[in-house]
Structure formats: structure tokens, C-alpha cells
Amino acid sequence: MTTRLKGAVIGCGFFAQNHLHGWAEFDDVEIVAVCDLDDAKAKAAAEIFGIARVYTSAQALFETEVLDFVDIPTTMEMHEPLAGLAFAHGVPVILQKPFAPDLDACKRIVAAAEAANVTLMIHEDFRFQNLFRKVRDIVDSGELGRLTFGRLSWRTGINVYANQPYLVHVKRFIIMDVGVHLLDLARFLFGEANSVFCRTQQIKTGIAGEDAAIVLLGHDNGATSILDFSYATKRDPDPFPQTLGEIEGTDGTLIIGAGGTLTLHANGATRTIAVPHDCRGWTSEPWTQIQDSVVHTQRHFIDSLRRGIEPATSGRDSLATYALLEAAYLSAASGALIHPDRFP
Ligand code: NAD
Ligand code: 89V
Image 1 (cartoon, protein in one colour):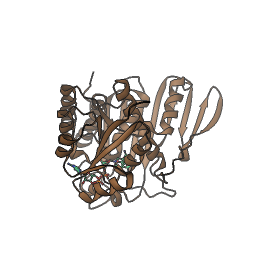
Image 2 (cartoon, rainbow, N blue to C red; image 1 turned 60 degrees about the vertical axis):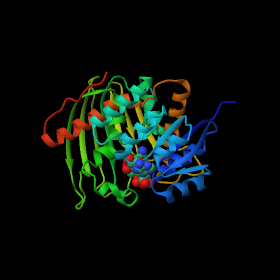
Image 3 (cartoon, protein in one colour; image 1 turned 135 degrees about the vertical axis):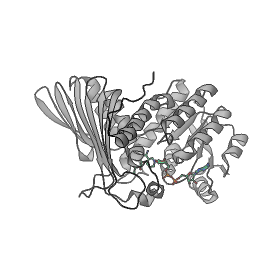
Image 4 (cartoon, helix red, strand yellow; image 1 turned 30 degrees about the vertical axis):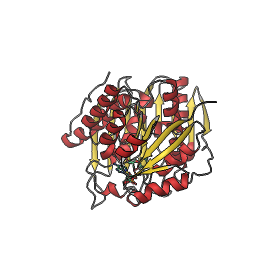
């Protein structure tokens, strides 16, 4: 029988509940401890998910537990110190997105992981959604020919501030919160990008950052992609949290529609492909698509650890995503087309 990997979860807030549900599905993983600065949140998680030990100090957690990995679904400000503690104890890390507040911090965390020779993955789950795994399969099949154009669109008017109140106060808001998902998807589908143009808007009053943005990417393969995203879109039905869009190639077009429906036109024929949810007992609408993808992301991390390979969204790989993010903010501030830092 496969040995069970022992893990801990640091941060038991809003989104971590999905992580905890996900880990509970794994026969080959045991979450042995949870940690949160807020004792009540840590205790509640331990009770609901039957987890043996509770900590309010990450330092105490690492000094006491023998861990095969740690999952850190805190907000990004804590990622550098918490990952640093894990690396100091030789423990592999999966960090929720966003990776860190800026590209320099991302680089420092990657350098620390490499110095400790420890696996680091960013929990970037959109590319692990059933829908985008299917889209990638279609792209890989070659049916669309050479990719020329893509649009990924994520627009909603939901009250995101109810579940995630910290978003009211962040100066780098929607590019960091949602744009990063789309930048990673754009890399996943079209490959690396060498130019970035961005325009941002703040539509809602009383928030610190931008709540709508458009990013134009020029990809190395010649394709252009447009990413548009907004938290200020009044629409009925509200598509939250779906990414819609289209991909064009020299031989066809793929429309990414609502409700997990793909429409593929290629070779003179059009067909519709329905991409269903996984049907877990604990998921609920409108979050099902994302909740399913949390488990796929976790599975990829565990499989990468077991096989001793670099995860797809490793810290090192994610530097390219965050270079695009940094370039987008620079472009929005300067009005210029920016050529992002490249990473080997
Ligand atoms: P949250 O504030 O609800 O939870 C974070 C928790 O971490 C809090 O309970 C806090 O007490 C705890 N914490 C902070 N510092 C700590 C420390 N040093 N030691 C122990 N515990 C600590 O935040 P959230 O809304 O759950 O968001 C967390 C992250 O998840 C954000 O970065 C957000 O962008 C991301 N998120 C991702 C998705 C997705 O689809 N991938 C969806 C929602 C949120
Ligand atoms: O991805 C996120 O962090 C979330 C949501 C899915 C609502 O965009 O903010």
C-alpha cells in the first residue's frame, strides 16, 4: 500500500475550506495538523475535518510536526515568511495564488526554495478546471491549426467583498486577484508572451485598487490574446465564476461558452462539447467548477512530489506569470507597451 503523505494546512479562512474538503478525499494523504492565527478557525477546521492537532503559531507547527508537505492558503502577504519557515525545515510547499505582492518577492521565494532544494508549487487552479483541461486537449489535437487569436473574459457583478473583505483595501486588486488566473491560462493555452499592454479602471467607489482591466498579450508563437475582467459588470445571468471566450486558429475556432459548453468549428463542421462537473458531495454552485479544480490542483502537487518532478505551476514556472502581471501594472501606469522579464 502507498504510504500516506503527512501534510499541514496553514490558514483556515474562507477559501481554505475547499482545500480541507479536497485533502479529505485523498486516500494517500493525511492532514495531521492545522494552523491559524485565529484559534477558533483552526479548531473549527480540526473538528469538521477530524484533524489531530491545532496550532496558532507556524513556528511551533514546524518545530513539532514531521511533515511531507505544507499547504498555505493564506493571503499573499504571509507567503514569504511562512514558506521561508517551511524551507528552513525542508518541507515542500504549495502556496495559494497570488504568489506574492510583487515579482521581486516571488523571485526571493523561488530562490529560497531552490537553496533549500525543496518543491514549491503555486496553487493556480484555473488551468486545472475540467473546462480548460478539455480546451487544452483540443488545442493539442491540432484541430484548430496554428493559434492566431484568443480572448478570455471574466466579468461579474457579484459582491466579492462579502467573502473576501480584504479586497476592498488592496491597491493591486483585480489583476492580482483574477487577472493572474487569466495570465496563467493564456500561458497554458498560447505559450509565453513577449509584450503586454494594459488598461485599468476603478469603477466601484470606496475601494483602493482597480476593479476592471483589459490586458493585450503578444505571444512568441505569433498569437494575440485579450484578457478582459471586471468585478463591476451588471449582467443577468451573472456568469460568475466562469471564464468565457474564444480561440481562433488557422483551421478553426473554439467558442468557450457558459455552462461548460464548448463549440468547436473545424474541418468544415461544427460540434458542441459539454464539459461536466465532477459531482462531488461537498461542492455547490456557483463554485463547483473552482472547487473541482482545487482537488485537481492538489492531486497534481501530490503526484509531482511522489514522482519527484517539478509541478506545472511550480514557483519557478510561475515567475513568468508574475512577470506578465508586473508588466501589466507597469503598462497601465505608463500607457506603454511593456516587454516582460523573461525566465529561462
Ligand atoms: P482569509 O482571510 O479568509 O483566510 C486567510 C487565513 O489565514 C485567516 O484565517 C488568517 O487568520 C490566516 N493567517 C494569516 N496569516 C497567518 C499566519 N502567519 N499563520 C497562520 N494563519 C495565518 O482569506 P481567503 O479569502 O481564504 O483567501 C486566501 C487566499 O486564497 C487569497 O490569496 C485569495 O486570493 C485566494 N483565493 C483563491 C481562489 C481560487 O480560486 N484559487 C478563490 C478565493 C480565494
Ligand atoms: O480567485 C480568487 O481569488 C477569487 C475569485 C474566484 C472570486 O475570483 O477572488
